[in-house]
Structures are given as structure tokens and as C-alpha cells.
Image 1 (cartoon, each protein chain N blue to C red):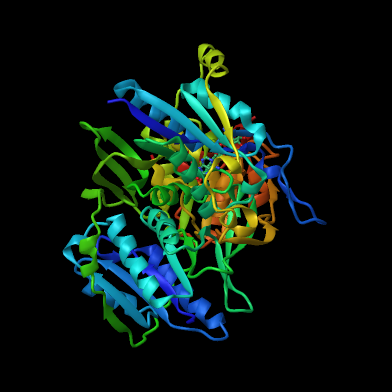
Image 2 (cartoon, chains in turn cyan, blue; image 1 turned 30 degrees about the horizontal axis):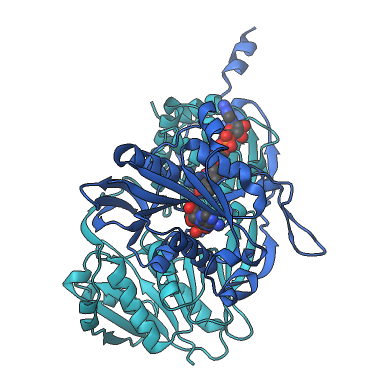
Length: 330
Length: 283
Ligand SMILES: Cc1cc2nc3c(=O)[nH]c(=O)nc-3n(C[C@H](O)[C@H](O)[C@H](O)COP(=O)(O)OP(=O)(O)OC[C@H]3O[C@@H](n4cnc5c(N)ncnc54)[C@H](O)[C@@H]3O)c2cc1C
Ligand SMILES: Nc1ncnc2c1ncn2[C@@H]1O[C@H](COP(=O)(O)O)[C@@H](O)[C@H]1O
């Protein structure tokens, strides 16, 4: 039995996805905590992967399995799961980490059934216990509780982590062994599901996860007019706008990808400015790691104030116009 | 083309009460007894999608829930929305199942119901929120499955076209029924129940199934047999300084500007001067 830590590498328009990069960094960290560590192994599935392999080898992967074929260009769950299952059966890894992205959220649990093991979802922290086993910390009840999840009797121990939860890794050069995967066996797989197209738009402005200042608006912002003010202030500060679910449902925000919380993004900007947010655990779970948290709410008893460095008791409708004025925004 | 559709509906403790959840310091168990249950919000979108499909093509909608026995109110609500029949899987042996075991039990029940064209779930639950049950259910049933479906169209006899969400856009797919889909919140707006619906709900077929009704391997279900095991439990310590700042609107706005600078954000801002101060000064 080996102690290898595997990371499934996902790509976004030929680049390594943020989630996979963060997981590679995490694998390096976990390995350093183990008494008898194995190798860090990356699995890349797709088409025309040479550049991606380069990147992966710069972040600590000692061995890289590469399944490179035209028919793997678009994500096809049956092919991707079959390749992972095949490799797992062959190599019996100790741990397998996967991003809780749109693709990973389907692929991870699927592979867990195929290789008959457990998987911990949406982990916020990964640890190694005294037996070199994985302890995955997962949120429950919208993040109010955190529980350790163990998988003592099945292998690999699987875990998924959302993008933005873990820190971005440092580069470490290692000699990576590249192992091409023979995918001839895929001719036996006859998927009923056919991917027929993919559409990606370039995200506008600074991505939420990378912004140094994030202005979050909640239901208390009240209307589209005041939402516009948030957008303008964020643009002026070189930051991004995030939202809560009610603000999304009202149609004020730019879309699902701007929601912060358990079912949305996890962010850790230098400054988080929250307007009209009550502080439900679902939202707080996604912003609690921000360095400085300032919240404005007209309700002195608002829950969000317990999660803030500074809780400003005031009316957004009065404060936003003053901020606009001071920043010279018309 | 009448379709037989199963919708997986999970009753969950109402998220509005999560902030009050505590851990018993002695027994280390979660104290949540007093919390009422609601239908998992995402699952209302699943019911709505089934209703829309039925309106167009005809068929039958069966809800399937695995939960403790005291959730009849939630099941009636699903029936009141328009589902035709409901099954509740309830047994002490099921308690504490992880997603592996939950999806296995749900799949066995779907096999027992039989002849299903489509399984619809929500994307995630509000309490555990793993998002794993839908794909695992699809695997057990050995049918194609997709997660986070934002568009679902039945073209002709059992041929379907779908869109799923990805990080910066969407993917398009073709498939054939039977399949399983987890629908996103964006796919539709769930309808409300009507008084007529509520009245009809109580007369609709409703059946409880226990361990003995399903062809299950007892060694693979429940808390102790699930592949994942729960270890220590912690309450998230989210409390910060929590310093409350009060003042005039100008002072508050100025406070924000000053702290942006302190937080390392470069701001060019004019000082915020209280307009009323000037006025009173003139008097
Ligand atoms: C399964 C599930 C997943 C979820 N996931 C997420 C998630 O990822 N992210 C998320 O955000 N939510 C999520 N939610 C929703 C979450 O539970 C809360 O409902 C939501 O976060 C509350 O948003 P809010 O604070 O904007 O609105 P509210 O709770 O309505 O709060 C509005 C606040 O604004 C204040 N206010 C009103 N007017 C003014 C004014 N003029 N000036 C100052 N203050 C004002 C009020 O005092 C109040 O505190 C989820 C829910 C479920 C069930
Ligand atoms: N106990 C259950 N009973 C019925 N459906 C469930 C159950 N658990 C999960 N589901 C379904 O699976 C979806 C995702 O749940 P989860 O994987 O727990 O986040 C939910 O939206 C439900 O449709």
C-alpha cells in the first residue's frame, strides 16, 4: 500500500484551473505532514496538453498521468470517470483530491461510487492524522458547524475543495515523471451522453476571488439604483462586487458567479465591505477569511456584526451617495 | 409519450434557524431538535421542472424522500404543488447514512418503483450541502446523469437536449432517456401551492417503505457502515472584534474611506464634510 496523494487537474480554456492549482499546493503541504509520505501524482485528461503538463510540473507533481486524445477535448463524464477509475484500480492511491467545481462536483462523487470509496464534499480544511490518514473538515448547516470526516476503511480517501478556499501555492521545481495513459479501453465505453458544445464568456472586471477589495451587497441594498452605486464604487477602487442570494434573486447583481457563500464563491480579500447583509451562516462561510471586514447595517442587532471587525450602524441609502461623492464618482 | 418521473425531495431543518444550532458541551451532539423542517429549497425547482414536463407530455410524478417519519407536512406540500404520488423511506437502519449509502438506498427504491424515464433532484441540500447524491444516484442506476442543469428540453421520443453550468459559461449536451438530472435554481421558478392543491394532496397515494421493503445489503447502510465517518465536531468561531461604530452618516462614510486606506487599498478621496454642520454654523 502506497501513500501517494493524487490531484485531478482540471483545465479552463487550456489553463490549469485555480482549484487544481490550489490542490497541488495542498498536496505538497499534506505530504510534508506525513510520517511515511508517498508521491504527489497529477492526473490530466484532455486534448493538446503539453503546456498544461509544464505548469503542473512546476508545482510539485512528481508523477503526471496524461490521457491526451481528441475525444477527451470536451468533458465527457463517462470517459473521464473511466480513466480515473482505471488508474485508481491499477495504482491504489492513498488520497485523491478534486476541485469542487462544476465538473469536479459531478466527477468526484461518480468516481467514488465506481471505485467504492467515500468522498468528503466541499472541504474547508484538510489535515493528516497520526496514521498518515486524511482528515477532511466539512461545513454543515450552512457553515455553522464544522465536522471532521474520515474514511478509515476505503481507498482512496477522496475530498473535494471549492476554488478560493486554499492558498495559492508557491512554485517548486521537481523532476516530474510523465506517464502517458493508454486509453484504448475507452472503445468499450459507449456513452449515451454527448457533449455538443461549450460556451465561455470572458469574465468582466476583476474576478471576485482575486480582488483586493470586495464590496458585497445584500437584500438591504434595496433597489437597482443603489446597486449601481456599489458597482461604481467597486470599479473606482479596482475591486469586485459580490452578493448574497436575495440580491441575486432580485436580479440586481451580475449573476450566480458573484454570489459569496456556501453555494457560491469563497473569498479572502484584504478588505470586505458589506452593505445590507444580515449575516446568515450561508454567506459568512464564504467571506470569513477576509482580512478586514467592515459591515454596514441599519439594525444594531444584525448577526453580521459578530463576524465583522467593524459594524457600522447606518442607512446604506445615506452612506453610498456620500462615498460616491468623496470618491469623485458622478 | 407519458413519462414516469421520480423527484427526490429532502426535508431539511429550516436554514433560518441554523444560527441557533449549538453543540451539547457534554455529549458533543448537535442540538437541533426544536428546528422545524422545510422542503430543501433546491428540490422545489426539481418538482417544478417535473410539473412543467408533465404539463407538456403527460405522465406521472412520484416524489421520493428519505427522512425520519415526522416529515409528512413536507411531503404533503410536494403533493400539493402537483406531484401525483409520494414515497417516504424511513427506518432507524437508514439513520446517519453518508452520500454513498443515501444514494444507494434511494436507487434501490427507484428500482423498486420501476420503469422510470427521468429522475430529477436538486443540486444541493441546505443542511449537508454535499451536492454528491445526484451523481451517485445516477451511477447506482447506471443511467446517464448531469449536475447543475440550466436547460432541459425533450425533443422527440425520449431524445433530450440539455445545458449545464460551468465556471464562465455553459456546456450543451444531447442524451436519451432514461437519465437523471440535478436542476439548478435558475432553471425555473417554483409555483406556490393552492388551496385546491392542498385539499387534493391528502387524498393522493402515499407510502412508507422501510428496510424490509427494499433489497438492501444491511452491511452497507446507516451510520456505522458508511464509507465516510464523522469525527470531531466544531462550532465555527467566526466572531471578530465586532466593534460597533455609530455616528452621523458623514462620519460613517469617512470611516469606510479611512479603513480602505488602512487595509492597503489605494483611494483618492475628498474628505467628507458634514453639510448640516455648515448650516448650523451660519445661524
Ligand atoms: C441551500 C442554501 C444555500 C444558500 N447559499 C447561500 C450562499 O452561498 N450565499 C448567500 O449569501 N446566501 C445563501 N443562502 C441564503 C442565506 O440563507 C440567506 O437567506 C442570505 O444570505 C441572506 O441574505 P441577505 O443578508 O442579503 O438578506 P437578509 O437576511 O434579508 O438581510 C438584509 C439585511 O439588510 C439590512 N438592511 C435593510 N435595509 C437597509 C438599509 N437601508 N441600510 C442598512 N441596512 C439595511 C437589514 O437590517 C438586514 O440585516 C442559501 C440558502 C440555502 C437554503
Ligand atoms: N435523504 C434524501 N431524500 C431525498 N432526496 C435526497 C436526499 N438526500 C439528497 N437528496 C437529493 O439530492 C440532492 C442533493 O443533495 P446533497 O447531495 O445532499 O447536497 C437534493 O437536492 C435532493 O434532491
